[in-house]
Image (cartoon, rainbow, N blue to C red):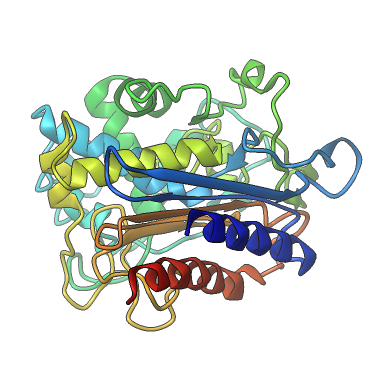
Length: 371
């Protein structure tokens, strides 16, 4: 079956490039239980479409992971701080951030993690700024978020929100006394020995990390006036020096697979630490919504994960063309990293490709198992 999955993964990657879904892709799977796992990785295409960006994608290519930052960095750090007794899901936001007028007093950390805080999904605050990284940008963005009215009563529904995770990143920094990137290294990538393969890329201090690295280009950005390579695509995160709770991670396919494997082990009680908070975090808070804490679950209809994921699977999407899904029942992890926004974010072919990608691979797994 592994050989068949390898062929399917190879063909899917090649077809995605040929069909113009993305210029380049790195995809992988982990199968089986701890002690008897097999990993498959395939790549295709190039890091960009012209000039110095036309490098062949390899397993070592770094991709802008975009919103995969929410579960893989922000949520996992929150869980680690909870396990240390430094945070509680029920802590009010106002314990850490002064809202000025006190109108956010009803919001707690759990609401931010489950996208049920009342905050808007997104607002283009970056348009108020010059495209220049400056020390006061982060504070100004937080003030702008706090100054805008809530869109619904906190806790009454779920609406996916970048803004809530920007605030969670600020909470982490307040509690830890460290930058979010430093926390990620201390709690997540360092213990997994992944510090060279998944990290936040500060625009003002991390450029040395890119020396000799293959990096997938993203958009030819009209606001910044150039093709972005080794600079975070998300405008708000870029203004915040590349480090934020909602975006900013760069990583390889192998690093994301390793992190997802670690999450699965902790989720099933096999990790050395952090298992309790994580297990709580990966439960739905609202029966009729797919969001748990920092992670998503498959929608009953129209899921990007296709039709075959188990109901209790967890995953997330990234705007640049990235995703992962962890299926604890089928013991399968699937990671798809691409730069579908290069050279233009208007390319949305990945919306049809993602479910086909996952269904093709899971069909092979289920045929093996006779299901």
